[in-house]
Image (cartoon, rainbow, N blue to C red; front, side, top):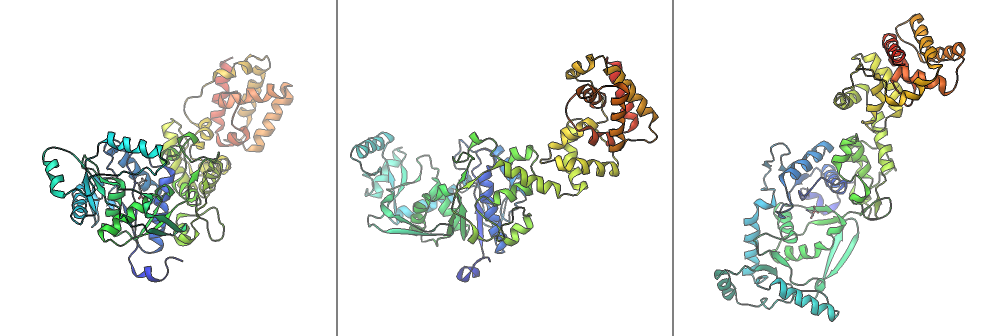
Length: 496
Ligand code: GLU
C-alpha cells in the first residue's frame, strides 16, 4: 500500500550505492530492485551513488559494467551517473564518493571543532599491542586512544611536523541504547558501548565507509535505506555520525541474506552470481528481475511469474521478509522459460538473432517458417542460448558429416538406407515433408531395406544432420526443404 501517515508528505528518495569492484552481483541487483520498486511505488526518486573510496579495488571498467547491467535489467535511475557517458546528472552530486573528499573533510573538521572527533596518532603496532592485551583479558577489542583528549593545537603541531594521523569519532562515554526501527526486522537495539572510537578519515585522507555513507545519505536527502543485512551492524556507527552532525535519520530496512542451495551464503563457489553471467547464458532481464524479487519478498497473491510492471504495482515494503532466501537456479531457469515462452515470435527472434549470427547459423528469412520453427522449439527453450543447438541443424551453411558418424557409415546396410531415402525424397510431390510424411518415409526405408532400430535411425540422422545423435528428426525435417534434404543425403552417400 505504499507509505502510511507521516512519511507520505516527504518526497521519497532512495539510493543504490554500489562499490565498483567487480561485476554486479545478484544480491546487489536485488538491493537495487527493491529500492527502485520502493521509489516507483511512492513516486519517489531513485539514485545511484558510487562508493569508490577503496581506490585500489575500484575500477572504471567495473563501474561501467555495473551500470550497464542495471540498465539491462531496466532499473533506470533519476539521479546519479549516466551509464553511457559516466557523467553525473542530478542536483545532489557529485555522485562518486572519490569526488566528494572535500565534503567529508569539511564535516570531519566540523566534528573536530565541536569536540566530537579527534586526530589520533596511534601506530598500527600500538593498536595491535592494545588488542593483544584486551584479548588476553577477555575485554572487548576497542581502541583506547591517548589522543582522545589531546589539545587541538598540539595535534596540529604534530601534523605540521609531518605526522599523518587518522581522525577518530569520539564516542560518548555515557551509555545509551540506539534503536533502529528497521522496516524489515522491526526494532533492533544497539548498546552504544558496542563500539569504541572508530576511524572516520584514514591517514591517507580517505573517509571510511560509515562516515561517507552517513554524510552522503544525509546530504542527498535519502529518506529510506534498503540494503544488505551485512550492513546492519554498521548502522550503529552511522547513527552516531548522524547524531553528532545533527542530521535527521533515514528509515532503514536490512534485507534478508541470500544463501546458495547448500544453505551457505551465496558466493562465487555456487557458480554464476553476477548478472552479467546470467545475461551471457541467455537469461532475460525481466526473468532475472522476477526471480530476484522473490528472494525476500512475496507477491500478495503468491504469484510466481510477475512482469516488471506488475512488480511496480504490487510491491510493498511490508511484504519484505527477513528470513534468508535460497538462490535456486532450477527455479530461475523455470521462471526464465515462462517469460521466454510468453514472448511473441518477433520479440524472441530479435533476441536470438545475434546469438545465431555469432555462431554462423543462417536461416530462412520467412516469417511462416519462423512461426513453424518456434512452435516446435519454444517448448524446448529455457534460455535464449538453447536456440543455438536447436536451430544449428537447420543452418543453410555447409553440411558436414561429423566424425562420430563413422560407426553408422561402416554398416553394410547404410548405403541402401541412404539410397532409399534419396529415392523417397525425389518422389515426394511437395517442397517439404510434414511430420507424418517423414514418419511414413522412415517406415518405408525400414520395410524396403529390412533394417530397424539403430541401423535405421542412426544413418537417417547422419543423412539429415551429419551426426548419429541429437535433435528430434520429426521436428526438424518439416523445417527443411526437400532440396536441402536431398543434397545432404547425397553428400552422406558419397562419404561412404
Ligand atoms: N557500497 C556498499 C556495498 O556495496 C553499500 C552499502 C550501503 O548501501 O550503505 O555494500
